[in-house]
Picture 1 (cartoon, rainbow, N blue to C red):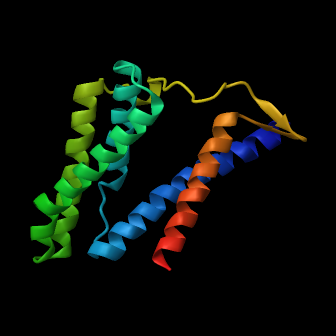
Picture 2: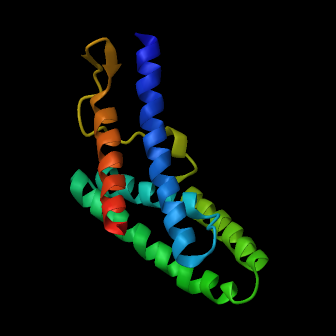
Length: 161
């Protein structure tokens, strides 16, 4: 039973990493640069969702929309602000700027949310009680994470065809 739980947890983590990788590829294919600060943009979006849902007490859907909108706006700001002008110069300049943006976003998150990222609980959408699907133990949240990840990746695949 522990092995099946480890496998489902690994599958869930892999699905979330795959979404981040899809985002990196989309940025690279559309701009020609690798944004080193990509992970930090996701982090800020996660903290925005936390602030809207937990701190402001608004519903999950509102937190999701706020996180996506803020992540998009921050991504546009980062691209059009420091990165786009540097793209005309050299790749090294873009990479140094992206590393700087990464450190700035980490610092902002630490200043606003106190550097407690690993310890801030985000309430689950569904019950955290494990359930059995045959011999496999899963947490309902894992089903949602994998399902949404697969749906988003299929949607993107269809969009780019």
